[in-house]
Amino acid sequence: MANDIAAYFASEPDREAAISGIVNHIEKTWDPRMRRQIIQPSAEDAV
Image 1 (cartoon, rainbow, N blue to C red):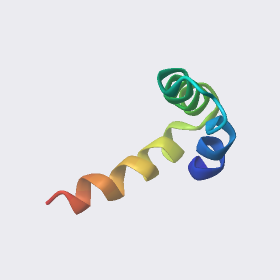
Image 2 (image 1 turned 135 degrees about the vertical axis):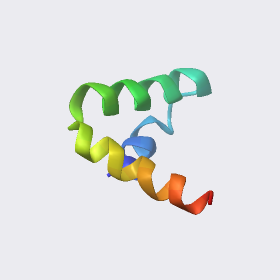
Image 3 (image 1 turned 135 degrees about the horizontal axis):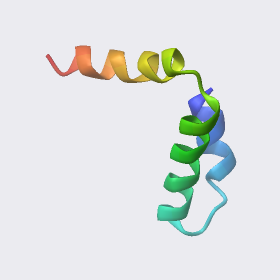
């Protein structure tokens, strides 16, 4: 789902605005459990 959001913002010519849009969307609409699920695998891979 995060990839779909990123694809939506891919047409934004201002990269910083696109990143901000993705972050804002996830922070405002995703349940905290969903946000943890996309962060958790990254943290485990870093070990």
